[in-house]
Length: 104
Length: 104
DNA sequence: GAATCGCATAAGTGTGTGCTTATGTGTAGT
DNA sequence: ACTACACATAAGCACACACTTATGCGATTC
Image (tube, rainbow over all chains, first blue to last red; front, side, top):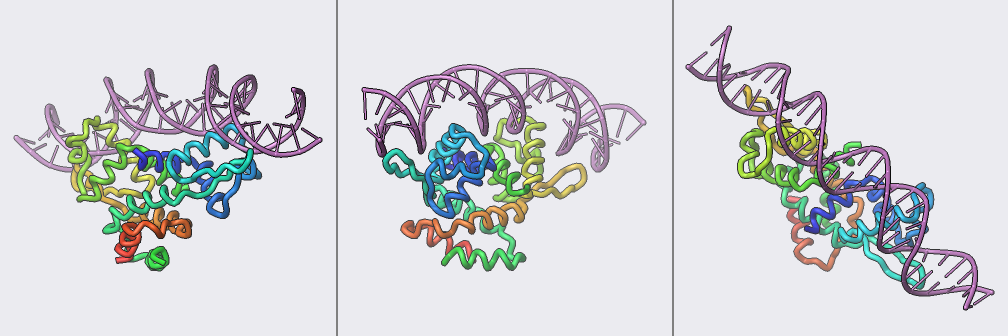
């Protein structure tokens, strides 16, 4: 179940930080480690989990591996969230604006 | 961190099932157990986690406790997701329609 | 008011998860 | 070829987590 992989992947705060970093621009694994106080194997393992969830995908460039956000994972979250749109708070004005923005 | 509570709560498949059930109509804890092969304490513990994440909230009715979906949790996921809207796949037509629907 | 019911909490246990160190694999440079 | 580098994988370990049984607590019923 890929849906399970996604939520499990995002359940870890370190992985959410990694994902957020990649959202601000693709990077290789070493660059991602900068300022994160995390070992190289740990980063590699986290990236493997994010890959399995289709939240990121790799692009090999020589001996470097460039990582970037994979839209597929985000799309699945959006689909999951859409199932419960009936419960979204109409009273929160900011959110309404956000949603309008989400549809371009 | 409530954001962490939300993703951690949804990382468990049993809790996602419970949440989905509640999205189809509010229920008390006993009714939720029907057809789920789960002990009473386990259900109670799961509901406590969902409560902490503000994904559900309780409403005491006599000796029963009625649970229903809390929009606050969903709103936070929507906000989290909105940060990455730049990466949403424009090529998936179905998703575009979904998003339009999300904004009413 | 005693028993029953709906639910929460406590305590203990097995499994999953994220980390570590050590090692392997492939590429680039000299 | 040898070394250095970027990254992945293996194995082991400490801790978190989801479950269990047992018990507590308040509300209803008789």
